[in-house]
Length: 193
Image (cartoon, rainbow, N blue to C red; front, side, top):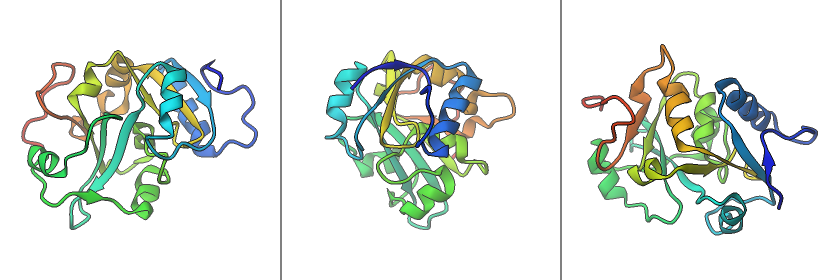
């Protein structure tokens, strides 16, 4: 695997959702490193990619409540265990479960194995709330997929926090909630749930 600065020079054979991700990051002025690889659709497959990027790829989970009326994208360190009961308590939502692949495609234009914060660019109705584990916020860099599981990106956590759409004028901060202790990186979002 090689490490590249920015978008691929040749986009032939790449899915439109991947190209939209690079366009989106370029428009926001977020610099990133990229590596291309065989499909990495689980955390075990991401271990080699982590070494190439020099960052732990985030575990991204697409969740919903039992009624499928609230959807969440959880970003957490790849090596951290997901505890449904704790998260449900933190966000005030009972019975969280993994959302269906159909909902993942509908809201984020992503398929299983490629779930990423980048999918929020496709959520035009703002139906998905972003939940970020505080350990992700502590890291200098974060790693994620560009809406496909055959490439991975490394970018500055601060760039994502400051420039991502939930921080842009006219975009509701209700889409972004961080977990555990509140961080001063974003304005308070108390009372949103």
